Length: 340
Image 1 (cartoon, rainbow, N blue to C red):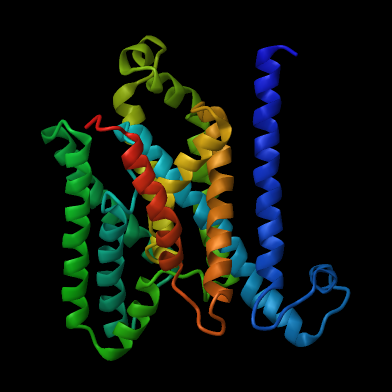
Image 2: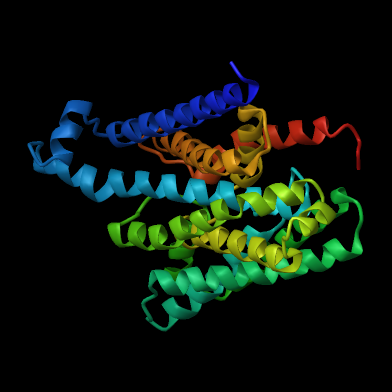
């Protein structure tokens, strides 16, 4: 078999494996819980052919929206991390490590507290806009730091420090919030896919899927930039516009996750690294869809653990993603062999 055809078969099988993994985890997430629902019952409920009223409510109102949210937001986080790693040419870059998630969290916290204290209801658009503004503001500081420092390790430390500052400011703001606002903010700030409703799923679909398509359409410019900016310019890539698109798309994807699920750690760093390792290539045309599927599978698995490991107690999603993702980040740092 021709080597190029062999690679295509390998990439196709890898994508098929990831898609099958996502579908299997979707079925498990819908089936397992404090009240288990068998797969035949799930099929009948989804096609309107049976199931008790309790089972129907559990599937349609709780588990299915939550599962779809984990798919969309997990994929969004992975793509956001991939774009940041492309922008900074650094495998450790990610929305959580660089403090972008903390900036979005601060902006959403201020918006939530201000609205709740005045009895103003907030829609999805307001939360996403606040998170996007926070992400862009934090990204601005990161870009300024990137101009001043040459070593990637210092850039990462700068991002971590910005994250600490934003977290401290968030705690300061919460200090002056009333009790109702604190309870709502505390539940959101721990990071969770619980409480998702169909309007939330519709809103995040409206944001995530078009952004993911835009990322995929940037496959060729990303591939050209991986070979160097000079090569990309010769291939006709408008570098300033391309870099602005990377910033905007990564910020939009990260903001959507923060607005609906709160901060979810290490997914944006760990998943792109695992995806490239699985595929054995860095070609964006293959890595981008695989990255979305891997992020969805990663968050589905972590959410399943968060719900069922100590049931009926539920862990925050960030606790689980950190336990799994942090060792991967450490392995990346150790694998860099002192290049910084």
